[in-house]
Image 1 (cartoon, rainbow, N blue to C red):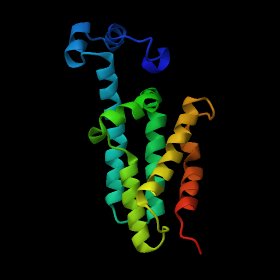
Image 2: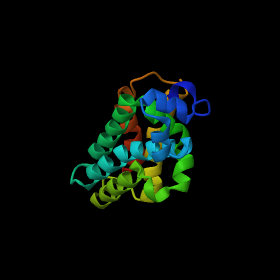
Image 3: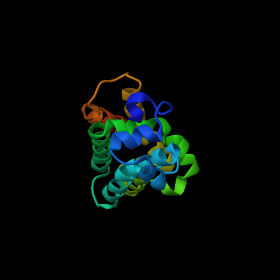
Amino acid sequence: MCAQQGIAETNLRQIAREANVSNGTLHYYFPSKDKLIETMIIRAVERMGQPAAEIASRASEPFAQIAEIIDLSFGLFDDDWELYSVALLLGDRIRVRLAQEFPTATGALKTIIEGGQRQGVIRDGDAVLLAIQCHGIIMRVARARAFGEVSPPLRQFADMVAESCRLILVTQP
């Protein structure tokens, strides 16, 4: 509802009506619209952050793992765009306040990059900065959909984004 009407234009009473729950019940669990949206965004990023961490923990080829995280991310965005579009718009603001509760793919990408650096297939450099660059590409493509710059599904861009990340990370001859 927030994605369709706009966040500012939506109130808890409308959300309760749309969800077929009483206004009182919704207020019991979520005392404000901000708390409800914050909870939704944290749950959305958990659906990305936890599987991404599992991908990073496996012994595998680093570029294949990165491609898998890109597929995971774009798949989640495509499958529940209304939720993730709100997360894209407000997630950064919430992440600043709730950094400990806010898992992202950046940590998983960092783990993969460090492994690739040890294997000699990913260039030396600050693994966090390299992970941020790759995650930035993923998120910018998702934001491009929110801005109307690209058409869905985002999955169609997964190979191109994976190649962009590979070019950033590959060791130089």
